[in-house]
Amino acid sequence: MPHFATPDSTSLTLDAIGAITVNAPVSIGGGTAELELQSGTGSTLGDISFGPNGDITFGSTSDLFNINGGVFQLEGTLPILQRRQTQSRADSMR
Image (cartoon, rainbow, N blue to C red):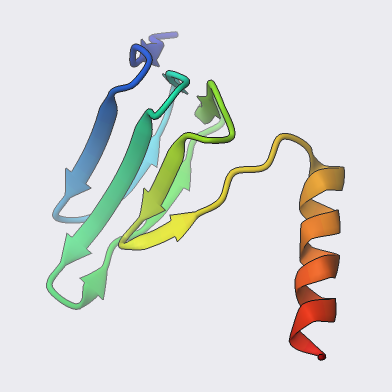
């Protein structure tokens, strides 16, 4: 199965007129690396999906991840993500 990897401190942008499907492992380097997925045209967003062998791994939680203009914060584990979500809900109720 082909594997694609970027070196540290680089950016990878996948820009498609239609859909983006990740069918093989993709590794994004650490440091200040960035992955940007842009799908669709104009105001119509395309689908972004993963095949059975497709996944994306990041070298660092400080890497940047952007999907169709939305920037996402990476977390190292699901418990950390759950704590941040719980804290965010508590903050929004104040």
